[in-house]
Amino acid sequence: MKMLFCCNCQDIVKIQRELRQCMCGKSRAQATDTINVWHSGPSKVLGISNPSLVKALYSDLAWPEGIGDGRGHRIESFIIPVTAPSVQYRANDSPELALTSKYEQ
Image (tube, helix red, strand yellow):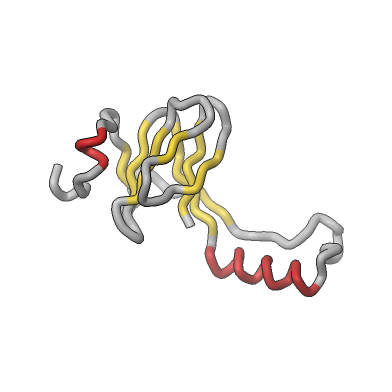
């Protein structure tokens, strides 16, 4: 799962096929297919490990009070690097660009 993190307002928004933006409106992102996304503004793209999320959700059903340290079930997340082929930064995010793939530009 990919998420947009706005460095300005610190909002986090799930990236989907429809255009999404943060609370302050300075960062935007959109998925172009099931793997590739573009983003703009003062932002980073975060990844959440789907297997770790599913495991945590199932663990929470079995042990809703948490485990061990009482902080709940952990998930793995990471910042997707700017060099990743599935993520593209766009300085100009007009609606026309949002509808084209990164290979058409």
